[in-house]
Image (cartoon, rainbow, N blue to C red; front, side, top):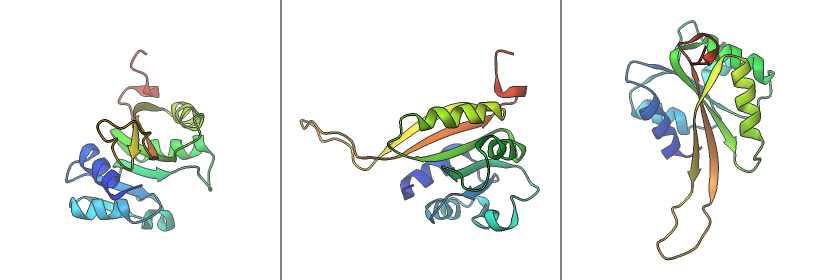
Length: 152
């Protein structure tokens, strides 16, 4: 994840008093949290648990090493406020992976909200070039409606 992506996630998905749980690799999200004056468990969440307070945002890498996807998303749901989000950072390339993540999240009661594709550089006008995509981010949410479905 780039520093810019960390800033975007923090600023767009949280307010200053919100708690963020950082399960991502690297310091990028921690820097964004500190710069935005947000509260966080930062990366200590891995070692000591996720705490007792519900978070507005949980950011994690993928694939998971320690838990099954459904168990992990059940734990995320239990630690999110209604309307809170889980941002899942995916390495770009496997086109089936986002679908697999969304299916596991849905089974755990989280709903799909958004798919962000981050590119290294924008294309230049007049030049035909492919974007150098480096990260896919799936945003999932804990719906206020039981089961994550708005249609009942």
